[in-house]
Image 1 (cartoon, rainbow over the protein chains, first blue to last red):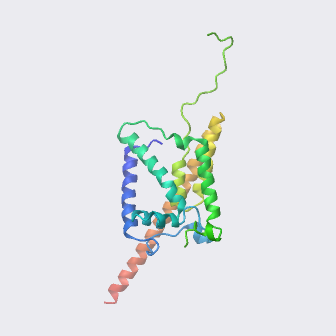
Image 2: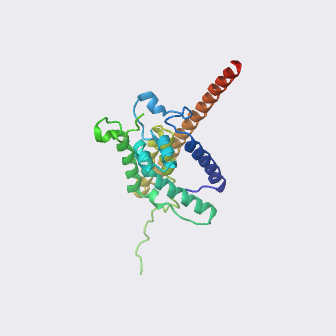
Image 3: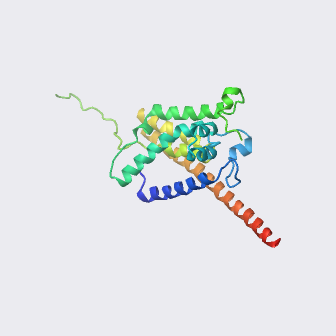
Length: 136
Length: 102
């Protein structure tokens, strides 16, 4: 992924502003945040449902609570951070790191499998699986 | 070492097509729409087709992954902008009514 410095700076500004917003406002209490369209239409959780509340919990250091809202988002977080670090290193520190893992067929298939299975399981209202739901 | 026949070399492509995996994961998590999942499906095709030597197919899958990731991103963005406007109008109206009541 080749990101120019301008793009990275723009994304960083949006990320910092977003983090401040999600730190100071709790999406489960505030009306400031939009609800998931998929959930609004179907009353089913999408793979991203609960991520706003998960971010709020993460910014306050509650990893377990964040995992309760959206386990997948928390699991993917290190991956996204890794991608961000590589992008910054390449754009600002003259590195030529390659994100090989994102181009491994097995890895990408695993991501797809995880997303689809997570989507399916979190909508099954049985005791152990119910923990995966975003609990609207 | 000597080669008896000139071997037909496969077209060695310069770079793997971008598979949009990270972007489609982000759209899946933050835009709350199934379009990100479609992006991930095409992302997986980019790699598998490239590995089997189907460079044209990989390039097509890359374009599809880009398309669905962008669709998800822009619809998500539009929803956020519309919602923000809605909140502003609602808040503005409430503020105005509160002023009127004084």
